[in-house]
Image 1 (cartoon, helix red, strand yellow):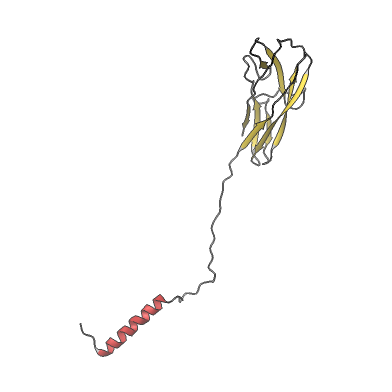
Image 2 (tube, rainbow, N blue to C red):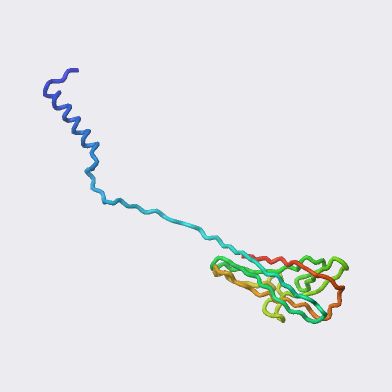
Length: 170
């Protein structure tokens, strides 16, 4: 195809003009300087509780009443309602109302109680009505456990032990 001379001189100039317009760093559309945008930040906080407990050492028992205390510490997310239950322990025959520390040799059981509000308070068990309830604040919440070793138990001498499971339901 042959182009006439005037078209030959106009065609390169027109192509050069279109290329220059498309490749220039400035645009015909005005934009803000600097350009901005936004994005969402999200998280989901789940209900959660952790629990710890200190030992309950009654010490030496001579047949008289012995009172001792322990602390169960519950830390739950703010606003989380919870209950804390204490089981019967590991000694065979024990219940949450009559707990027993066991001894290996000779066989025997030393009865004790775990109470909620004082040494003469309510039994602390692991069923509705016998557990302790609370609402988490995000901070550690200490709960006193009052232990009573009743008087008048004449069991064989030795070291008596038990292990209590603490359950936090939330």
